[in-house]
Every structure is written in C-alpha cells, then in structure tokens.
Image (tube, rainbow, N blue to C red):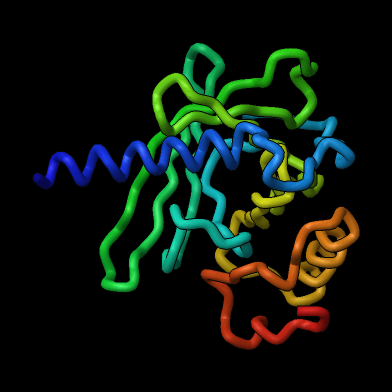
Amino acid sequence: MRGFYLISAAMTGLCCLLTGCMGCGCGKSTSHIPAVTNFDPERFAGTWYEIARLPHWFERDLKNVRAEYSIRPDGRINVVNRGTTSDGKEKVIRGIARKREGFPPSVGELEASFFGPFYGPYRILYLKDDASLAMVTSDTMDYFWILSRTPDIPDPELQSLLTQAQTWGFPTDQLQFPALPARLLNLPGQ
C-alpha cells in the first residue's frame, strides 16, 4: 500500500512538472525577458540560498532551502536541492541540468531534470557581476526564485531585485521569503 502512495505521489509530481515547467500555456511566458549573456557554469557552481520564491507544492513549508550545483566531467551540472521541513527533517531532491539546445554557451539558458528523461527550462535572468545574487525562472511567470550565496541580503539590494522582478511582470506580492528575518516580510510594495 505504501508503494502505491509513493508511485501516486511521483506521478502527480511528474504531471505537475510537465504542465507547469514544460510550457502548457497555464502561465504567462517569460520569453520577453532575456536570459543573462555572461553565464559561466563554473562561476554559477556552488551553494545558493533561496531568498524568495513563488509558492509551489514541492517546496511547501520548506525553510533553509538551498541549491548546490557542481560541474560534472561531461559538462552537465549536478543539482542537489535541500530544505528543512516544519518538523526539522531535511528534504533532499537530486537532479541534473544541462545547456539548452539552440543557445550559445554564454547565455543563461539551462534545462533541469529531477524526473528521469523529462527536462524543464531553467532560465537565469539576472546574475550579479560577482556571482553573489541571481534571479531564475522557468518558461512561465509561475516560477521565480531569488538566490544568494549567503542566507541573507541587505534590504536595499533585495528591494532592487523585487522592483526588477515586478517590472518583468512576476507576481511579487505572492513571493514567500523562507530564510529571511521577519523584518523583511513587510517590505514596501509587498
């Protein structure tokens, strides 16, 4: 019986990935927002802390969320996402990312898979010059994350990123801030 529920949960997750990340038309496209053109996988590798995100079932109630990227010998990227549940348990999911076909290597257009052969777009819209901050999405406005090399960022820098995200059309009023101190939850415009 337990196996049935695990398989059902996996299939539900797969269906959500296919309809949400594969561009079923459920959300507004991000094609009007150019990906970064100074992308270097080596500089992007390492640990990123999730500062803000649009809510999704696969991250429900997760805190201290971080993503670890490491370059494989074949040029693809190992992805390890982890976070802490409300009862203190660590939740981990592993995947792989690769460059999207049809884009030059220096453009921040990747695709990631956490479910076998199924890949979804992973677009890097902003990458600070020192690779300390990033904003990423999929191919729809339903997915958005602000990432940092540190678990906290200064208020003015966060506000600047939120303003840019809003200019692009992301629903910043729906963002969750899983790792930030409570003082930041009442930012202007939120």
